[in-house]
Amino acid sequence: MDPLERGITLIIRLIAATLILLTVMDLSLYVVVCLHNQKQIEVVTCITQSLPMLVGIVLLVKTKAISCWVRDKLE
Image (cartoon, rainbow, N blue to C red; front, side, top):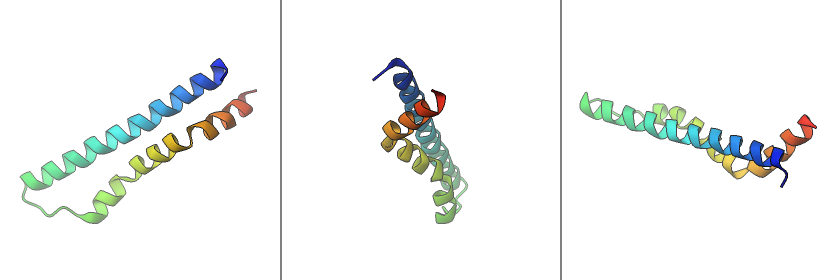
């Protein structure tokens, strides 16, 4: 693996981890606020707020293919 592909892979993994972490924090905050205000937790809101986590997981799974694609575009 050349240095360019290694750097691209690192950036993709960092973006994916950031998406997953922010989604977990956002969902946790939503649940805590709903419990504190004694409101019902809405499933639709949880699903729509968890979409960035899905994107992050897909990025982690497809890191190799995406890094090869970006490397080819840069060369």
